[in-house]
Length: 329
Ligand code: FDA
Image (cartoon, rainbow, N blue to C red; front, side):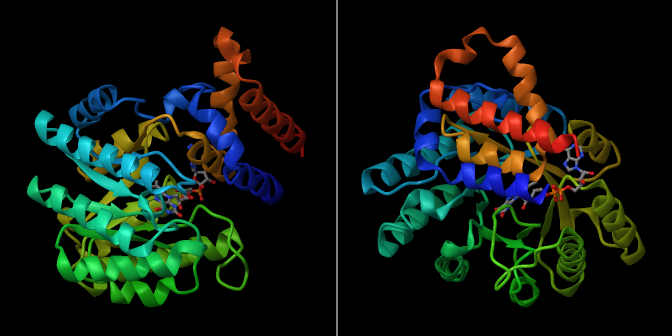
């Protein structure tokens, strides 16, 4: 399974396949996990989710940004989505990736883009989460997060439990709004835990520390029912009020668990990606859980235009072959 994970992570980092995916639209089952291509259709998904008693955080899909003009386009998509959310009165916050708005192009340009997004969000009373990407952008991201936290009160970030530095950072951000995750990228043993058991144990520790040490707001972002159940036991033991935390899950994953948590009175926020650049996001989801390949297999049998994109099809079929091979073991 670890090899399978590595294969999908490697596929997620392939820029050519990422570029090819933009022309394909929401195929291969991605419409089940992406809210829409356009802002208008995605806003309708937000309304559905709000109607089920859950809030939303949106993610404008797009990675491998190397040109300033592309970064400006992505920033404008984010600003347009913030405006649309306000216009439609839906309950939604923003999740942004700094590499998408220029982190790997020009640091000051990226900072200016972040400020523009935070200003626009603040004007409509919206929270913005700065997502944590792979370790190559970690230090610059943390630097910008810390600077923005000095200037703004509507910004938070993510701690990944696999990173060795997260136990230190959870104290640093104990009074901030923080999303806690296990971590989605392949990182080296020099900087990150490698075994699932260690990552899970570190994750539970981070949750407990953030819930109890400060007065920050904790977003517990996982689909892991064991960790969710343990956390609920801990919350009950400690008498932590429901307005101090929420559970977050990705759009299209474990919908029955999302509904169950809402029915039990907990705050649930659904992370909804939108746009046509679904490839890297989708490959990381396959890396986390190869059973998600079922979405692809179902869509292939239903979708007659599957054959239209040779490159995309090739990648997906290769993934299926690998999945079949390993799922026999
Ligand atoms: P994990 O994949 O460890 O699964 C644990 C167990 O849960 C499985 O063995 C299975 O029993 C059950 N399970 C999981 N998924 C299931 C499913 N679909 N159906 C049935 N059972 C299932 N990462 C990052 O590096 N930076 C970031 O900014 C973010 N942001 C983010 C936001 C949100 C809202 C979420 C939910 C996740 C992220 N992540 C992330 C991704 C995160 O780091 C992690 O890779 C995934 O959430 C997968 O780990 P889980 O904790 O969900 O369960």
